[in-house]
Image (tube, rainbow, N blue to C red):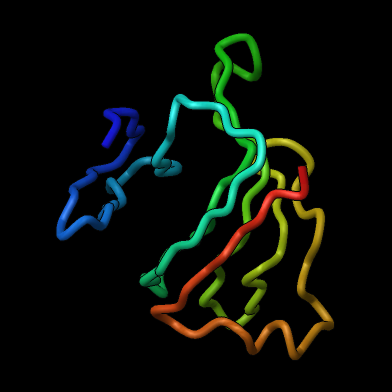
Length: 122
């Protein structure tokens, strides 16, 4: 595993990356310094129902952009009653790009301890 973690505790147990949120930090990110063109990401996610979660894709942090704030696309993982898992959020820029509001079948799709697959369109 690379040593590119920000604001979180990371461990590797049985070939699984385990990330733990750090209390009193605004966001927690597991970050790779590598750039990827096309990719597939598959992840099993165990969700703390008290937290806002998501998977960032095509995201960056540049010192010359908004003081280095992490920004980019987030595939939402939302265990709240709102149930917008699978929605697309643009972190620290434009906000919601695709909400699940009014899409009841999609809102029912998330099950805790689920698998998530993300595929790049480029």
